[in-house]
Image 1: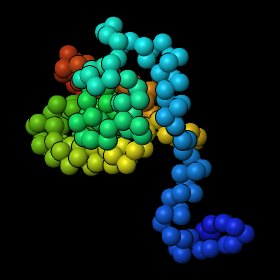
Image 2: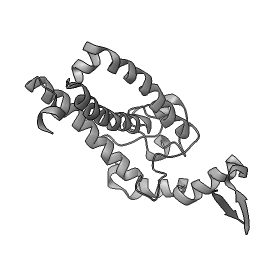
Image 3: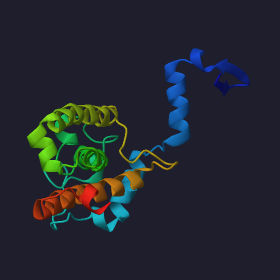
Length: 194
């Protein structure tokens, strides 16, 4: 039986209140980011002084916004703010969907022998699973952000924020490459080459 140690008392895991367990996990794995830390990064980080397109972030603007306004822990916690072009949600959710999509494509192609397009539109079952999975991943990703938790909160372990972000970016590029490659060779990549 698992146990939790708190104040020299051993309590069976089934008797630990949920809020206590959550606080223990949060303290062990998540880092706190204060408004002062964000403002200091905003002042010193060169990438925060202008956007990709060269515009200087201005308070209250549509795009780009200063870092303190676009982060979930200090900015507005509305759906519109989180899903804005420079918000926390788009890259996080798209990266998670792409990571799931690459794994799904590899397994499904090995099992069925069909390319991704055929699995989605010819058989129809792939599209059903996809339509069921997207809202689930979106919901699981957006709820912590609505509660003010940053997408940069993970501080230790193999699932750090930086690792998730880069794996998601690579998965988005990889999934697009998979679709384009299969369109040119007219065959499933994972069964042909692996």
